[in-house]
Amino acid sequence: MSRQAKDDFLRHYTVSDPRTHPKGYTEYKVTAQFISKKDPEDIKEVVVWKRYSDFRKLHGDLAYTHRNLFRRLEEFPAFPRAQVFGRFEASVIEERRKGAEDLLRFTVPIPALNNSPQLKEFFRGGEVTRPSEVTRDLCILPPPLIPTPPPDEARLLQPLPVERRGQEELDVPVDPLPSSPAQEALDLLFSCGSTEEASSSPARGPLSEAELALFDPYSKEGDPSPARREGVKKKAAEYLRRAETLHGQLP
Image (cartoon, rainbow, N blue to C red; front, side):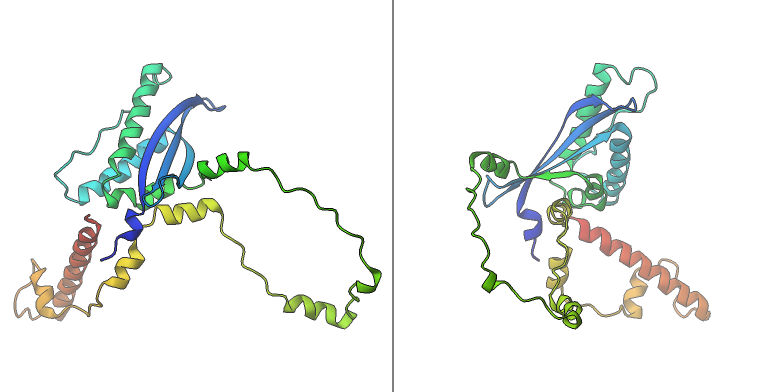
């Protein structure tokens, strides 16, 4: 099973620069760095500004996913509780900043968390940059302006007939609008590799009654009720799909 989509980049998360939003709450700068393993100078950054409630929601979503992974090797990090008084104190702001940073860094070695839709959505709308390209652009002078010679009247294109103008415009192929850099970065960098895994996995047919019976804790052999047998099969199939989903999320 190919895992190239997951292993192309090293990830590093930082939470820094707390500031007061004009509406009065504190927000934090969240930076996700994606460092290419093939070229360490190839670095992509996604930057978003988030508040405490955003981190708290992400913590709840990732904690739920982590519980369903049945991992016992590590303990999911705790997150500072909400409080009404003192939330603007420097010690509270630092505690929340560190808790948010610990949460993001905890996800790095766990693909089911680091490639989760919740984490991808958390960075949705962020500013995507390449620091190396910004540095190179500062060192490169713009090309010199080259004067354009006056047009030769003899070489001017003849206007199209009126009846052909509309048809000529229709004949010109229109390139599709390119997706935004932010969208491309999020789709690529937070890719789960589901396409590669699906292409490398053999096709599986429907489960037989004997296989369904293995996941059926309620069935009775030879149950005379067709409706009850059908309900048991559906429940067993649902359990199996859930088990396969959890198994596929394991690293």
